[in-house]
Length: 150
Image (cartoon, rainbow, N blue to C red; front, side):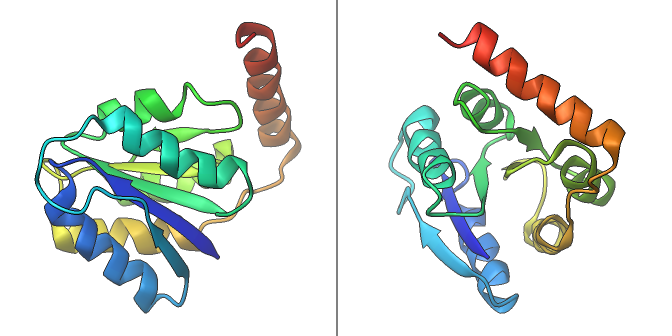
């Protein structure tokens, strides 16, 4: 898979471990920044990362900020994006299996490198279930997006 990765200055230290894990798993990675700990606004990085997904240049994305909250909020403002904060293994697979999440948001101040690596492995291995209940709910999310984002 092609994976877009990005984070703000609070996520910068953990982003390297995330990228390393993605590469170890054999996926292609595009790093959309930031590239040091100079303060940057997370919506700017989030927009670049999510645009790669919506344009088809990436299959999924991973965002790393301080808590994951800001990145998740910003990502979910973009049409075609279904983002989730992921801080445990169950959510890492269930968000994809049930909700077809295409952007995982991790809080660098919440999880360490070893847990982040586990979350990345679980998230990237997960597949959307295709169960009719799940498909119907994801369709409803898309309908909400079309109705409310004009």
